[in-house]
Length: 303
Image (cartoon, rainbow, N blue to C red; front, side):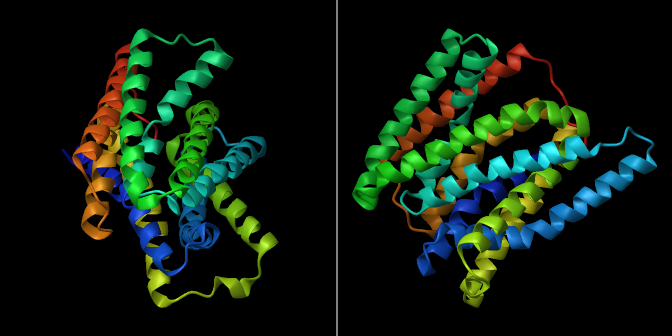
């Protein structure tokens, strides 16, 4: 039961990210600024976990992680920054609910990339899942236009770019996770992401532009710690107890958490069309996940 609770709580916390970002945008709709503060708050935790995990491996007399592998993971984290900045830019223009649903369809890109470059087979079930999910997205997209106006297409394209980038990131990450374990990989990759974000900010701007209100700092801290650091390791801990299959199925509820919080806190509208679209997206991606789980055995991630 503990594993399920950890995975569910971690999923809920991850889902709150868009809410905190949207609240920060009320004061200043600047994607790079809020993302930089997010990384300022989260980087010390990820760096500490990296050091702890490396020391633990040495004490356990496990094979050392060589410098080339560490550099590869850090560089993958730099690529992962692209997914983050596109997501945060997109959130300026679309609702938190639509953003979460678009990101939720990233497995479609995984399937397409795997088929195009690795010879994977696309099944009729995959096509059905993708078709149902994107039909649902189209409904939510149309429902979002009255509130977001002409910027909704731009925001949706940016978040789709984020989903594509994340899919590429996931494919590259698979072998690295198997080599070093999920905890060390997560900490190293997000350290690389954080460093890329800070470099981006200070190349374009000066330190004085980090000045924000106390309210903004609180929201950034919540985004960086409560919606990033804590759920990363809660989900890993849950996965270690209940396996990847059960964790993947629990993650299917993540858009529902985001939409509920968006309606409750941000006063975003949620119409019958939104509900139908959401059901199609979650149902389509849930079916795709079920198909994937049928094709491979359960695996617990090394923590």
